[in-house]
Image (cartoon, helix red, strand yellow):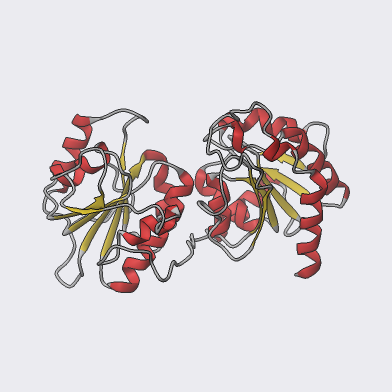
Length: 349
């Protein structure tokens, strides 16, 4: 466990209910989880909220004003980590009145169970009877979006939330200025590109298209920053190939740096990815590209986005790799369409 805030997890007497949120394992989902935190704070302004998540998630949680602290569980993806969960749970005994478990797996519910948190809320799944003692039935027709599912767990009764607040991560302006200096970026005219999608290639617009669009934007006097993790560095190199003022920052920045850089951008062009949701949370205009996934299920939570989705007969398949072998849902989305949308937004500002 990592207590990054330096505060004790023990709430003082005047504090309201102490709530532990067991967060999801994906960047975009963790950003969307802030809608739940905002809902809880609106209902119970004095409540104390801590968020438990994977080690990578702490920088995102720190940018949520509603979260007191980030607790991290250093367990590899797919590992049960039973001993680690037990040790963490022992340290958390007596600290919380309620736990809300967002993932539907059994292992995700173990820490609140081992810690004997009295009220443990979550959806029924993976034989969690007893482990989750306030079980909710997931009706996918009513809760047809990830964020609706998260927020609904913070309500007293099952059903679709009437209001979903959009995530709003804090910006560190000092860090933003340092990043501008470090990468020699202008104050305006910066376009972000996020070519990655951790889920799989069926969500990724072709790199040649990104490269062609970057070239057109540079000709118009723009700077382009390509953001992603170390795995995305080769993709960033392809986009930046032989182009001035295209900065391949994939693997060169921390997650918190990506938050501040995305807030600096005028617009971003992004696959349906975690960084797309980060961009939405800082108010940057998004050109959101959807292939195998659906903008109805995981839309960017913002009113400041253009959605590009061809809605082919085979879409959405929600597959990691195109089952038909052609990925037409993305290949048939031309560069000219995205460039036109970027220009239209600029004209309309």
